[in-house]
Length: 426
Image (cartoon, rainbow, N blue to C red; front, top):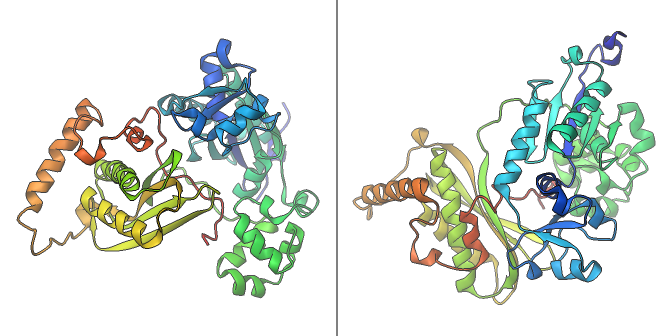
């Protein structure tokens, strides 16, 4: 057996980025191959599928032009035989745990960043072979044991591993070293680098920086002046430098939130407030379940043209009260939305979290007598819903047939806010 030591750096790390391909559709194909395998499929985010959007689609569907985020009606015009599937997040979580269990047999240093991807530090995993042998074994086992395709990037850091896994899909294994960066990455436009979104790329173009090679060679002072601390990261990243470490233990959640994509654009305040109520309810439910309180409430609004913005308010004292979160979510909406401007997606998220035991929660002078009663009622409602389901006890305002009510069903919803692809958060 050849000495695998030669395949590992003397100083440095070997990082894998494991990315499941078309994960939701692949899971359905693995569960019901006779119905979905090898066919053009799409998971649609709305029960009213013909008004919803494509959450993800199979590679068979992508070959004919179907794309994530596309309106279902448009997708069906392109491909009338497209098979639409309602999401099943319980099933996705089951398969996510399964592929993470396989990955954990190669290294304990795993950082899961979403339901369908993770980073693995295999620097100390020489017993399993060379990095390429480990990547090949991992990919083969996931295919044979779970019936799922995946792509794997092999690199000296997390950024390059992520870029590498995107280069060959589906079922690719790609090595990307720092010495490969000038040839493989520098000719690409700036928005091809993970972490650079459309707004940042547009701003770079105004500085006459169009390619990653130009960004790698750009004046750092100019970047710092234009982007603040993000400017230093931009130059480093374009040069393939990333000093982050794979964090095996998840940190305490920095935020908790939910979004819902609406099957039809909402324009009326009453309809929008009902969505905010359901979002606030489920978000604070998760907050209390984790015994946390929040100091900042944020709303996310997406328009029909897919432009998205967020607005936040920092509370005078931390809370886990649905009433308080809902009130401030409403205020943020009214301050930043003009009827009848249509809304495509709404989200509520809570930030600046801390354990409830560490928080000094100040009671309002005029309501302190009612607060213990409210807390007791909330605890009873939580207990009932834990036992009998999220719809066991509802306020009148939550009773609705619109998609915001579906957030109470964890089988058909995700668990957190969608990540925006632009680190500048402009």
